[in-house]
Amino acid sequence: LRVEDKLFLNRYLVDAGGPHIKVRPHEKPSPNLIALTRVCPAKCYELNDKGQVEITADGCMECGTCRVLCEASGEIEWNYPRGGFGVLFKFG
Ligand code: SF4
Image (cartoon, rainbow, N blue to C red; front, side, top):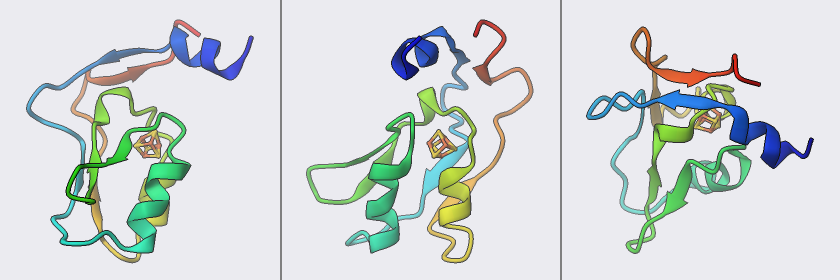
């Protein structure tokens, strides 16, 4: 299977209104935040039309890459999803 095919097997239970990751408000993104748009394997981070980094956490695989990258800077707030929500790997 290709990686994309494997990712398609995952299922997500979205906690609507309670995203488990938030990007702290910023005027211009730091190099760290820009890097998030490239390193997230689920492509959850994007630049909006104001040039700021936004996250759509619905497809997050909870790999922790962004958490590690921003641990020192505190530019994102990262928590595990509430119980029962988030990614389900059992289908893969
Ligand atoms: Fe992307 Fe992994 Fe961060 Fe989720 S935990 S947003 S999959 S880098």
